Length: 410
Image (cartoon, rainbow, N blue to C red; front, side, top):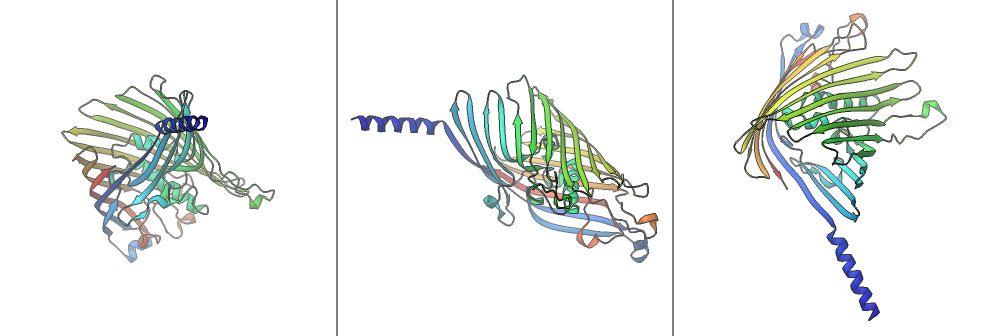
C-alpha cells in the first residue's frame, strides 16, 4: 500500500512538472526569385586598356528575401517562485538548396535562467550592438532592401576577419566576425517591468590559450563587449547601443572594431517611421606602427504604411567612409534606396516584392605609394567586388536588385 501511494505521488509530481514545461518547434521558409546587376567603371591604367563600363547581372532562386529562413526549438520550464529555465536552438536554412538546417545552430544556441532579477543567457546569441540595425530597419535586414548600415558593418567585419587570418565565431554564414552574432557569450537582460525601460550587457570570451611566448599568443582576439539600453511605451521606441570586437591582438598587430548606434521608431497608426544614426571605427595598428582609424558614419530613415492586408515599406540610407590610412587614399560615400510591398495571405503566409538601388561615390582606396601605379580597389566594406573584377582598376559605382517571393512561418 505504501509503495502504491509513493508511486501515485511520484506520478502526480511528474505530471505537474510536465505541465510546467513547454517545448515549441518553430521556423520560417522564405524563397523568392531575385535579380542583381552591378555597373563598374575602369580606373587608372585600366581605363586605357578597357574603356567603357562593365555590367554584371544574375538571376537566382534566393532564400530569406523577406524573413530569414530557419528552423528552431525553444522551451521553458517553470521552476516556481517566479524562476524559469529556458533554452533556444535555432538553425539557418538555405531552402533553395536544402543546405544547413539542424546540422548548424549558428543563428542562436542559448540556455538561460530568468526571474524577477531579469535574465542571464549563455551561448551564441545576437550581439547587443546589432539590435538597433535590425529593429529600426523597415526592411527587417533581409533581402536586397537590407539596412545599408547593416550591409556595410557586416562586410567590414568579415573583410577584416579574413585580413587578420580567418573568421571568428562561426564564419560568414553564421554572422561574420562578432557583428551580427557572437559565440561564447554571457548576457544579462533587465526585467521587463521597469516602466518601459529595457537593456542588456554582453561579454564574449576570446577563448585563446595564453602563452609566455608573445609570438604564439592571440591575446584577446575574438572578445566582444557590448550593451544596449532603451525605452518604449508601445508607439515610441528608442535605444542606444555600443559594441567592441577585438579582431587582432598579437605582439605585432592590434585591431578593434567599435560600434555605437542610436535608433528610434514611432507608430502613428497610419504609418510607422524609423531612424538610425551609426558610427563604426576600425582601429588597427600597434606601436611603433602608426594607428589607422577608419570611420564609417551612417544614417537611415524609413517608413512602413499598412494598407488593408498589405504593407508598403521604404528606406533610405547613407554611409560615409573616412579613410584613416593616409591622405592619398580616397574616401567614399554610398547611398541606398529601397522600396517594397508585402501582402499577407494569412497570419503565417505572405507574398512580397522589393527593389533597391545603390550608388557609390569614389568607392575606392588603397592606391600604391605616391600613386606611381594607379592600382585602385573599391572599399570592400562598402561594395565587395565581383570575382572577375577583383583585379585592381575596376570601380563599382552602382547596383540594382529585385526580390519577388513568398514567406511561410510556422
